[in-house]
Image (cartoon, rainbow, N blue to C red):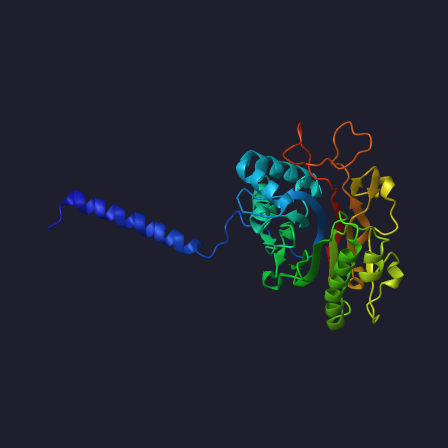
Amino acid sequence: MVAKPLRVCLLLAACVIGAWSAWHLSHLHEEPSEAPTALGPGEYLFCHWNVENFFDDKHDKRNHKADKEYDAWFADHPEIVQLKLKKLTDALLKMNDGKGPDILAICEVETPRAAELLKEALNKRLDAKHHYTHVLMKDLNAGRHIAPAILTRLEVHSEKTRLHGRQQRILEGHIVADGKELIIIASHWTSRIQATSETGREHYGEAIYKVFKEYHHKDPAVDFLVCGDFNDTPHDESVVRFLHSSDDKGAVKPAKAEPLLLNLLAGKDAASGWGTHYYNGKWFIFDQILISAGMCDDVGWKCEVDSVRVFNELYRPGDTKKRPWRFGDENDKGERGYSDHFPVTVKLRVK
C-alpha cells in the first residue's frame, strides 16, 4: 500500500504532466512567435552592391595571390571579420526605413559561409518580422574565390539556384512573392586589370543574354532582372551589343525575336551623382541593373524605373569628392570604410 504523502506527490506530478501535455498539443502546430511575416503583394527594395573582398573567418587554403592574402587576414583576425560585418550592416540598414533591402544581390563574396555570416549579423539588428530567411549562392572558383550571392526575406525557389558559363561569376536565383516569380541574374564581370579583358566582359554579356533569351522564348512576359559589377559602363560594347541593352523603354518589347533589356543606369552622368566606382581620378558607372519588358507591365513583378538610385552616402567624412570609402586590406591604417563601390537600388512592386 502506497503511503499517503507519496500518493499526494504522485497525484501532483500527474497533474503537472497532464497540464504540460495538453499545452504542448494545443501549441504543436502554431508558428513560432518570432517567425518572419509572410510577404505577398507590395513594394520591395532591391539592391545590388559589390561589397569588396568579403571573406569568411576560416582558412580555406586559397592559392590565388589576392585570395590567399584575404583568406589569411580574415581567418587570423576575427576582429576584422566582425568589423567588416559591422560596416556592411551599418550601410545596409541605412536603407528601406532601417530594414535593409528586401532583396540584396552582392558580389566579391568568398563563400556561402561569408554570406550566412552577413545574414546573421543583419538579423541580430533587425526585428524578427524583418529577418532575412534565405541565402542563394554556389561556391565558385573563377580564378578568384569572389562570387555573387543573393540574400532575401522573401520566399525563394532554392532548387533553381545555379551558376552559368564556364568559370564565370553568374548566379541565377528565383524570388517569389504572392506566387509570382522573379528571376535574378547576379554577376561580376572580368576586371580591367589586363589589357585584353574586353573579350572576357563580352563573354559575360553573351552568356547572360543567352539565359535571358531562353526564358523569354518560353514566356515573352518573363520577369527577369540582371545586375552586377560589369567593370564596363552602360554604353560599352559588352553591355550594349553583347548583353543587348537599351536606354529606350519603348524599344524594350516582349514580342521581339531579339528582345532587349532596359538598362536603368544608361544615359546617367557618372560625374553627377550616378558614379558607382572611382578610379584613377574618374567616376564610372560599373554597377548596373537591367530589366526585361515583363517588368515594365502591370502583371506580376513591376519595376519602378524612375526610383533607381546610387546609394552614394558611403563616403569618408571630409572627402570633397565623396568617393566610395573602401574597407581596404591589411596594409591600410586608420579607420576603415565600407567598400570601394556604391550600392545601386530600385523599387519593385508585386501586383
